[in-house]
Amino acid sequence: MKPFLVVYASRSGCTRRLAEGMADRVRTLGHEVQIQDVRTEALPLLERYAGVLLAASVHLGHHERGMVRFVRSRRGELDGVPTVFFSVSLTEATVEDVRRPDQERLDARRAVSKILEGFVLETGWRPQRAVPVAGALADPGHWPLTRFLMWAVARQTLLDDVVREVTFTDRAALNREVDQLVRTGVARSQCSPSEPVEPPPFRSAVEGAVLAP
Image (cartoon, rainbow, N blue to C red; front, side, top):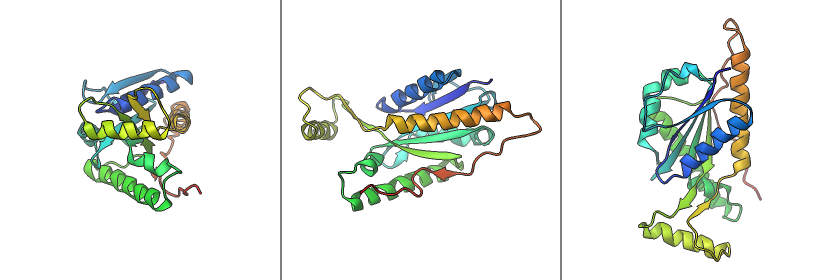
């Protein structure tokens, strides 16, 4: 059985921690996994892996440039293996926040869709599945606006301690996506070369979603 690969591009560290959680989930399912920062080392041929999980943070409406460059250069290989792409942003946190007005959440959902389509246009690659993930507010020490937002969240949630990071990620939903990719990779690996598994058609996780009341 081939191992799985997790590739991430992170700025504040939130996406890196999510990627580490994905790798831990794959190990829990009984499979080998390699985790790789997209900026550090050249990766071997992707055909060596049973599946590839990619995660990139979003800043100012665009994914990390390192991930864009990686996907653009390896898109042919990515088309040959099961993949799932995780787009990590605070905009998705607005989408998932049932306390927000419906129109605000709808506007955020449209923004997330636009960001994902922008990634497809930038890279020339359409992932088999694209999943928006709510990220986190991290305290970088010298960003006054971010520190103010974290203080506001702390007051809203009645937290007394100093807040260093406020995480909005739905871990259970993230695990379900990882599980699905692993099942697809295992099924593909068990097929003979004469019976290839057709990759599933692209479907964004934001398509067909219904706002909670």
